[in-house]
Image (cartoon, rainbow, N blue to C red; front, side, top):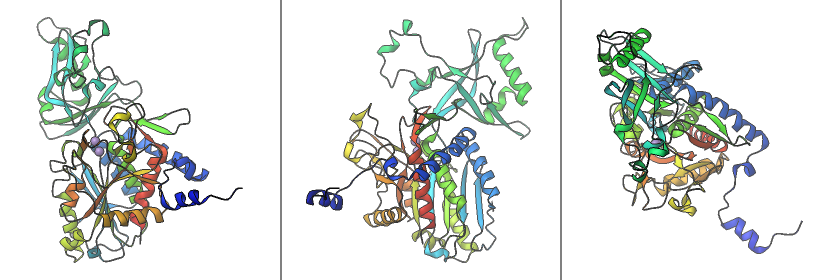
Length: 467
Ligand code: MN
Ligand code: MN
């Protein structure tokens, strides 16, 4: 072996040296990462909506000894609680041995994903086909949702108050729903539309049936037949759509991508990849020194609005209630707390390099990504972590041997995005964005790397366990 030159040594000492996770992970760790991804895929398939993600998480938490949070209880170190906010967002916490007023550690992700919600009065018949009108939710590229197997998930509240859960298109043998697109032969005019306008909101109509009811005396026989079938299966009538939340999501299941099986394609990695990894870290901790809190939030994709989104006071109330029950001052608790705002980032995609600034983006297989700030076009709307907090997070990740990288979303003037970070920061908590790089983010079938998924899990574990 030849000695290293002065330049080589200097380079090692002074310069960044990004590495592929496969070069850094031991064989054992790589196997762990792949095994971890098997469970993650199962979680994805049973948690396609925010409500399903909450149900999955509550079941997992109860198995680990978590109990519903009671603001009147004085909790002890090691106690595990959860607060289910309306079945659509969830807060979990493990009480630490150190005083609450020293602050808590928060991991906050979201469990809603872009999708197509049904309109309030969705069902109609046209030309002897029964269809459902949709209103898309979140940043959807509409043209991506046609000619795909789609499933319907959600709840319907009937006139008597009974709540029915609807799932169509998931079980093997289940029929699926479908949004049509034009054949190329007749798409001359449509092809001239811009990509943004290629499929319009009012063209996203779900085909749900085409057989008429056998009765000459009534009109809209196909619609009536579908309503009859829905009534048989769920006991619902047309007005019940007015008190329902029905979400159209891709019917596809999570799958490995690549002959080396290094990646996973699925609907809703954004942001279940951070939700699942932080949840697993949360559930696996014993009695920590510092109380840690995991938030699975709703409504991030439409601006964290509503009482299940993080712009609501529910997280603030949870901390204030916990503090009160334990004889601590909630404002002091929050002011001393730190948070990893866990949300995905865009991965560099060699097919579309122009939107990225190569020196400052995140790459597949280089680990979990830290974003000092998000926002768009001049940091608009970001909470921008301080150098001091970045320093803390940096040593925490380095000490724990986590594979991590730092990046921005894309080119400065290209666009941008926001996360829940700013809503937590507004409670005087130190916050930084962290997340897994994603290819084709917000599409019906997104891609992440198994190495990055596992690195995210390790990052949350290190954050919760740090002394
Ligand atoms: Mn997200
Ligand atoms: Mn998103």
